Image (cartoon, rainbow, N blue to C red):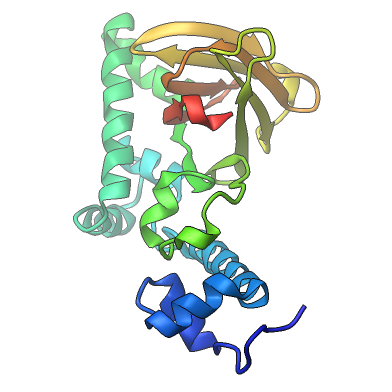
Length: 247
C-alpha cells in the first residue's frame, strides 16, 4: 500500500491531525488515503502505549500509600508522601478510599482489635493502567476516522499484582453482562475470592480457579466495586462501570 497522492504527510503533520489541529489539506488527505490513515492509526496507538507507561510514574506505590495511611512510614517518607498528596488528586482519592474502608470496618471490630485487623489484611487500591478512563486525560484526542478500534480488557495494577477484566454480553440473558477476570501475582489463586459490591450491598462472592481465572455473570448495567480477597491482602477495584455498550 502506498500514498495515493504524494508527498505523504510527515510525522509532524500526522501529530497535528491526531491533536485536531491539522490544516484542511492534511485532514482531507488522511481521511481519503488509506495508507496515511493507517500511519496515523499506528502513531495514535504508540501515543497510547507511551501514555500508559508514563501515567502516574511519579506516584508512590499503592502499598506505600497504605503504609502512609496507617502511620507506618519513616518521618522522611511520610513528609515526601504528604507533599505529593498536596499536588496529586489521584493519590489523594486513593487515601480517602482507604480511610473510608477502615471507617466502615471499625464498628464491626472491638476497639482493641482494630489495629490487629490492619495487620491481618493489607488493603490496596488497584490502579487502572489500560483500557479505561483513568488514562484518558493524558491520551491524544482520537480523530473521527480512527474511532471504533478495540480497546481490549481493563487492566488494574497494585504493585506486582495485576487484575484484568473484560466485559461481554451474557449469552443466556442479553440484557445482562458477564465479566471475565484474571488475577496474577497474588499467591495461590485457589486461596482467593472475588466479592462484587453494588451500592453498598454484596452482589455475589465467588472463587478463583487454579489458573487465576473467574467469571462474574448476570450483571445489570451499573457501577460495581470488585474486591479480590486473599489470606493477607485485599485488592479493591473501585467504580468499575458495566455499561450496555461494553459488550
